[in-house]
Length: 184
Image 1 (cartoon, rainbow, N blue to C red):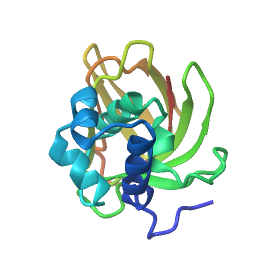
Image 2: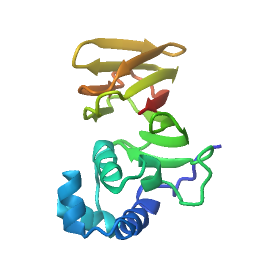
Image 3: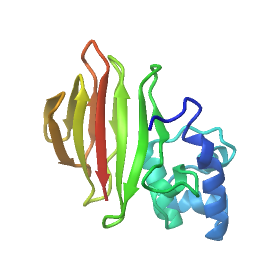
Image 4: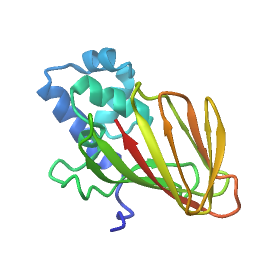
């Protein structure tokens, strides 16, 4: 199932952050202090106006005692069929869509990404023990980590620990589509 064009991470994020923050008995300032996300960002998130990194969302989720999916998904959506856009690049067509999530130590997430030519995504290190598995479906994807750089072609996969800096780069002339499984 393809996500609708109107689907966007801010659709549910603002309501979920506010609802979960209030349920946890936290003020916006307390949530900001616990998560390391600025108070201004928390305020803007709740207003549906902020842009925040995926790692920032992970830190908010941890501070609220919930998962990343709890922040971005419709609360009644089954975890087997989330279909929410959680990242948009600078170029039209560059998106990451959260497809599903299953339990792991914390959870495992399946995302489908599209990167247009010259687009990149710069990831921040995750906590120790987090990993990703990437399967390139179309085009090629350069993955740069702290320790190595690999180019993964359509039909190939790559797995790595994400407790380090990492970047996804489409330096080809056609779009790149890949599946990304995040395990925490």
